[in-house]
Image (cartoon, rainbow, N blue to C red):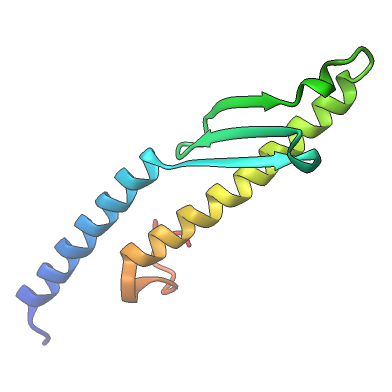
Length: 107
């Protein structure tokens, strides 16, 4: 039988790394853009939409549909970036257990 005390210490260390990674995720902020930078959205680590920035040239009459499409595209860009950062952070925290298919550990 392997050293149970050593395994417990490893599990506690990994648990602490995962807790630290979750705290870092909560503080994370990412930006997504579309329309060549005409629309920018800011997402918090939780996925919450924190800010929308619009180029003033989009505020002309008749641009409502374009603005809507650009906001959706910018949000999708930010969400992809956030998901990638979250996955990287969790892989880093899980160390050798990353990719082992352990329930509750998604990467």
